[in-house]
Structure formats: C-alpha cells, structure tokens
Length: 378
Image (tube, rainbow, N blue to C red; front, side):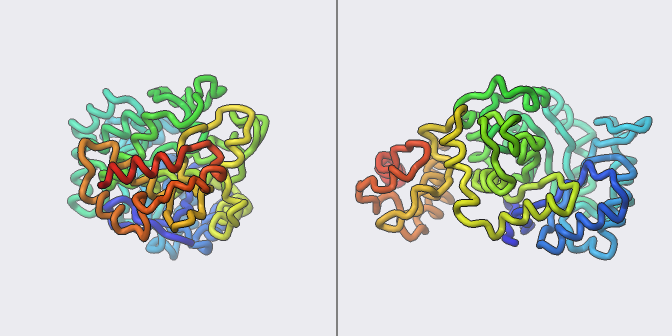
C-alpha cells in the first residue's frame, strides 16, 4: 500500500480507503471486509451512516485495532424515528456524534466532518453559527484532530477551502461526475448524465487545483458513480471502466489523497486493492475514455502519463499539473515555483520534437504547452 499526505494535516492516509456506510450484514461479515482492508494496508475509514446496526457492526470489526485506523466521523448525520436524517440542530447532531464515537469504540476522530453540505446558504449558516463552533470546540479539546467537510457541490467545496477553516474535504469524484455542472441537488449526479459535457467541468477542475494550492486534502467518495461506471449499460461513456481505472483517475486529480470505496464483500475490497500492483495497461483509463463513443476529453490534459517517455526526461504530466496550478494565480506562488524548479527536467528542457504527442489519447498540443509553461516560470 502506498500512502499520501492529506493536505497539510500531517496525516498519512492510504491511497485506498474504506467507506462502510451500507454494510447491513452480520458483525462477522463486516469484520471480514474490514480485516481485508486492514491487512491490505488500508488505514482511512469514513463512517457517516447513522444506522446503529452499521455503527455497532463496524465497532465490532475495529475492536482490537482502533489505533490502526484514521477515522472520519460526521457531525449532522442522525438516526431519527428509525431512519437516517441530516440535521443542523445540535440537540440532534451532538448526541449522534457522541453515539458514533461510542459505537465505534474510539475516543476521538482524526477528522471531524461537517456532514453533507451541498448548498452555499446552508454552508454559510453552518460556518457562522453554533454548528461550526461545536466542531471547533471539539478540536480544541482533542476529540477532533482536524476539521473537514463532505459535499457534492464544487461551489460549496471552494467556499470551504477559501474559508481557511476546513482542512480536508470529502468530495464526489469520478470521470462521469467531473463532466457535470455544479448543482446543490445531488440527484443531478445520479440522473441519466444528460447534462454532462465533453471534458472536465472547469469549476470542478479549478477546485482540485485550488485545494492543491491551499494545502486542503481531498478524500474521494463515489469513485464508481454508485457502480454505474463499471457497466457498459449504465456508463455515460458507453463502455465500462474497471475499479482500478476509476481509482487511478481519482488519484491523478490534484490534492486527492485517498479513494474510499463502499465495499460490501471481501471480493470488492480485493478489486480495489488490485490497484496497488496494477500494470500500466490495467491503470489505463485514458485510452478507454478517448475511445468511448460519447463524452471525450479531447484537448485536455488529464495527467494520465501516456505521453511518457520524454526523450529529455521531462515528467510531462507533473509539469502540466504545476502549470495549471500556477495559472490560477495572478503571480506564480513561490511554493509552486520551488516544486517546479526541483524537477529533474522542466518545460525549459523541451526540445520541441513533439514525439510525445502521438501518445496522448486526448490530442493535447504538448510541445506548445511546454513552451508556454517555460515562459510562465521564466
């Protein structure tokens, strides 16, 4: 298992995470899945689901190993009259938050998540009122290590980053959702993809780059679009992707540290863990998307790495990523300039041979981009 820094939190999280929110089986079944994750090196666990059965099963599964997990716990996920509900009422949210700690058998959450905020007005109310004050107070007492937020709306995520109060965001990322325009209605993501464009939506694209620039780590939910990307019949591309390809797409986005799948079986865990030993051909989402009958990403660098090898040793995908981050600012930030300068070869080393361009599935004019980037960092 490979591990990544989660923004500037200091937490090193596994590339593959564990999202057990729908595990309604027996305690033993839950433990088998959790053990398959843990033995595979997975250390990040998110539990937003408020169902007491699921929380109890997960607590049973974690028993004896709680110190090996980095846990995302949620404020605002409640169990009311026998069903899950979101609530910003602390009279409901606080007991549910404390219940999660108790049922999971932990004394703190490494990440305390402001749960499922998809509307900017609601975000502002939460941040300016007692909802955020409570979470901040839990951080001061050590019950929460770092404050995070979960959302499906890139506008809300951007506001969270710009607030300077949120250290990590759990966001829905996959190649289908990345083509969808922003919305405060999650149902638009799970419709028929009728509003999907051709290529990554610029609002989502700029969000990932802003997170990278500001040191806000991203953990990923919905990496398979609820499983629809795994089937040709339900994929908006008309062709299926594998779990490994979906995970690789997510992990090539700026600021992404971990991809949390909602595994129900040990076999599904193994499908995700296969990412760690996958061959270049098995990782290759780019060729699938480029050859799909619908919704291509033509002209856009997706940092897939197909352009390699470069005859002078430039890591083209990384150079493009630094250039994209730099172009978000009026002036190139010194931190990005320093990372760029530390590369063994930069865009200034490009000889303009364009031998890389036939390898790009999306037709990116790489030589021209290298010239632009060299001028940008000059």
